[in-house]
Length: 107
Image 1 (cartoon, helix red, strand yellow):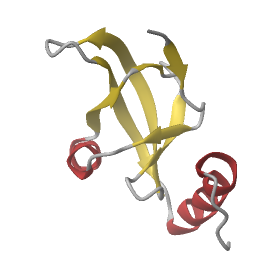
Image 2 (cartoon, helix red, strand yellow):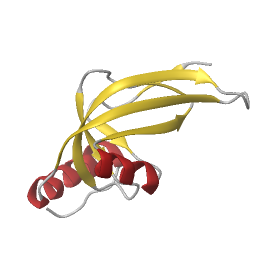
Image 3 (cartoon, one colour):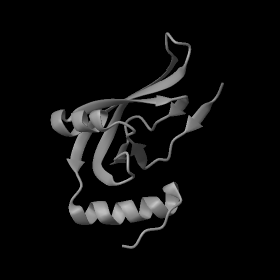
Image 4 (cartoon, helix red, strand yellow):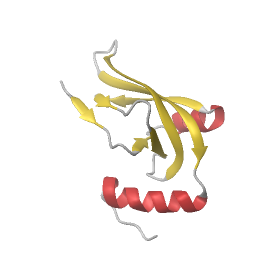
């Protein structure tokens, strides 16, 4: 059992539904497997399940716990600061692929 640190600038959604709720309602929550440390109070870039930068969000709450099934999970609540423009999304996506996701794309 141990905590895994998330990248300071990455908040990647695995579920389209969680992302939709954030964009539609301005607040959202996602659940990650394992104990993770998210930078509560900081603004970070949110990514779609296909690794595309989509918005700036503020991490409001990060709770790591063992759920009723005995699994280690981290729940993260966030507020939408704003959606990225097409140009911002393109540049941030290219940078993230090079820095975090291990792929290089053309800018």
